[in-house]
Amino acid sequence: MASALGFCYLELGIGGDYAGRLSREMSPADAHRVKECVKDYGLTAPFVCLENDFTLEDRSDLLEMIERTKREIALCHELGATHVRLFTGFELAERMTEDRWRWLLGAFREAEALCASFGIEIAIETHGQLTPEGEGFVHRHTTSTDWGSLQRLLRELPPRIGINFDPGNLKPVGGRPLTDYARLLDGRINYCHLKDWKRTGDCWTACGVGDDDIDWDALLAAMSYDGVYLIEYEPTHDVEDGIVRSLNHLRKLRTVSMR
Image 1 (cartoon, helix red, strand yellow):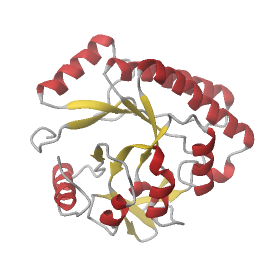
Image 2 (cartoon, one colour; image 1 turned 45 degrees about the vertical axis):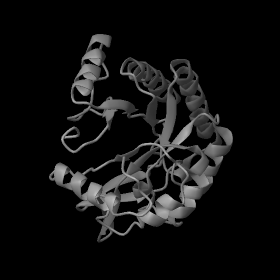
Image 3 (tube, one colour; image 1 turned 180 degrees about the vertical axis):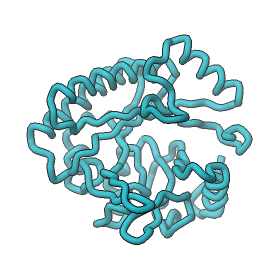
């Protein structure tokens, strides 16, 4: 599908235990086969996403999570990744104690040291805590969506750690215009997901670029980021149609030069 639609780049995922993700038990030979498959379709896959949580309350669980993440970063290196997308975690921002903040920041410093040795950049995704409700989800602030928490991350994390700016994920938690987030994060954005969320009653459902009310012209104009933009279309019932709709909307924008 990616090749047929004319894409140059693909995002791969490790872990998560659902269809479409690569195994955490992947061998170097498995990684080589994946690389060759991607190449056969005329694509490159420098972006790999992991399923981590560095806000775990139990210290032993967190240490285990850090070690698992480091093993998966090594797999990203085997895959030829240049960027690995991580989460801060899914604890509510309001429940984070100073101890948990210290552990969170330490986990990222440890992951960054390993990534630096491989020539890989970390991108922290802006992502709230999602609770299923009705036909969608309720979004609440985590350390990667709360304004003050984002300021602290930018201030206290190593400057080489960047941000995966996902404005669609910031919209449902509310509080500020998305252009404010774009300007705050601008100098650290090294990865970008494009999607939207649509309000359905008291909850939100994921949708494509242009399917709801994000002003993409204004938002992209507020950013100096000049890297690859990745369409992240989440509904599973009409994946190809949703990606085509997103592409068509992007092609109409004044701020986008498709290449």
